[in-house]
Image (cartoon, rainbow, N blue to C red; front, side):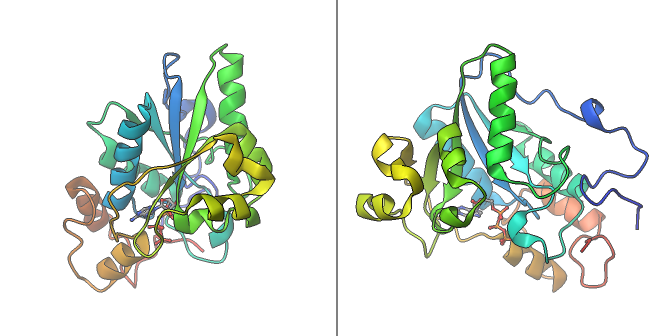
Length: 242
Ligand code: ATP
């Protein structure tokens, strides 16, 4: 196994910091969607919600933000960030409105969304750009939002773009009012978008790959090839780090 930094997933000794920070956002991008996730691996479920939210909200950019250490998955093995980022890059290639951010990979410790949004917002302010952020999340993730790190701060920094996931339909106004912290439901900062529900999940893709089954049509062809070439998710591989 390559000797990798456990947080960034970069090979140790490889250039870090600004050398790997991609030019992921343009000054002209005023309406920016953020899709955070483990992306282990990215699949068509992610891509469809990103594209349909982009279209519905007329976003200038959707930023995919892979988590270095997902706070809810600290006990689970996660593929090195360098591979997860590579798969995101392959998956979004060709869509000029999509970009990947390494912001969470350059920070130590767990990847808290509120910290990420604060960093992105500070960066916009430093550049003198007024920018609206729309944090995209599915209903199943929304149901846990109160348990996230500083959810009120998160809601102050971004609008929420809520999408359905099979088994977790869009919430109604009553549910939102009862479950969102800080009265966010009544502030107009939460928008529900009825994207096409796709039952894809990264855990299902990993399980299929581990069992030697086809993952064709679940992930883009380039991601499928990357998984195959790098022997990811095979039960005896040494790529996944605890
Ligand atoms: P895993 O199966 O390993 O838990 P996942 O498929 O849920 O992974 P994540 O990277 O954890 O993928 O998801 C990032 C975000 O995308 C989360 O808000 C998640 O709810 C959402 N998401 C993932 N897959 C779908 C899907 N098929 N439909 C709608 N939202 C999805």
